[in-house]
Length: 146
Image (cartoon, rainbow, N blue to C red; front, side, top):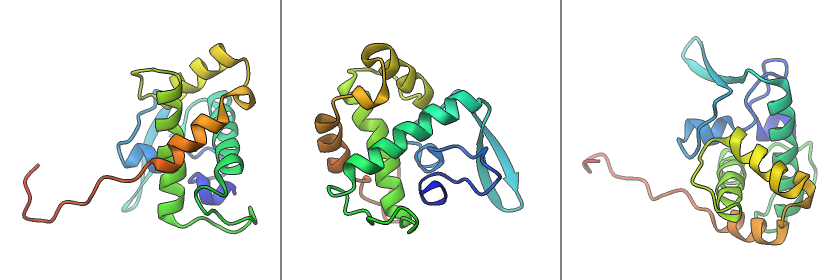
């Protein structure tokens, strides 16, 4: 699952929520941008934060597998849309369940730890319902102005 959920092809330092950050669904104080040719890569400055985020994403993957119709075999990579829904949906659900205005992924994980003691102790039934409901906004046609 590591290569399918987080952009982890740089030896493990990749941001776990890179797709959500690049989609501008969230931000992170620990994310660093690196250009690799024509490709933009996000890396995490904090190994502890990366471990916490990876734990949250793995729990989300495990608990929302059926709701998001994710593959049962963790070795099978997720499609881009599945990974985007998992990452953006997990952070949006966490923000809603914690009743927080923060969009920073790391701060949300820390707040979840403070309030619940462990990411495994989060109210996953509520999180999964919100996570599964997350949809990307409709795409604008090229003629539309922002």
